[in-house]
Image (cartoon, rainbow, N blue to C red):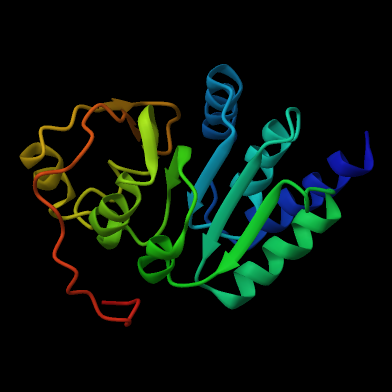
Length: 202
C-alpha cells in the first residue's frame, strides 16, 4: 500500500467516525470515469466538504495534468482540504478557494467543461444559474443528492422546466441519485433574480 493509499484510508476512517458528508465510492468512480472519458481539462466543484470528492477528481485530472477549482465556505473545512491536498501531492492540480460561492462564481474568469454542484441544497438554483454561462457548450453539469434533498432544492426543478433544460437522473448508488446534464442551450431565458443576501443560511 502506497503512502497515498494509507493516507486516504486514515481519512476515510475519520470521515466515517465523524459522519462527514462526502460523495460515495460509487459516485466517485462514476465521476472519475466521466472525467477520463470526456478528457476533462478544467473542472469546477461547488462545495468541497473536507477532501474526498476534490481529491478523487484530482487523482484523475493529474493523469493529464489538467485542473480543478473547488470552492468551500467553511474555514475549518477548507483548511482540511488544503492540508489533505498537500498530503497527497495535488497542489499543482487543485486550487481551493474559501468563499461564499454565490459571490465567488461571478468572479471566476475561466470556462469549464465539467461542473459538480454539491453544497447548500436550497441554493442549488442559484449555483446552477451562476455557473451555466461558465460551462462550454456540449459539456457537463452534475448536481449531487437530488432525491434525498429534493424538498430543500425547492424551485430548482421548475427553473429547469421553464428553461426547457434536458437532464437525466441517474441512480449511481443506494445513498442518493445525481442529476446529469449536457449543456445544449447557449443562453437561459429565465434567470434567477440576484436578490440573495450575504447570509449563507438564508
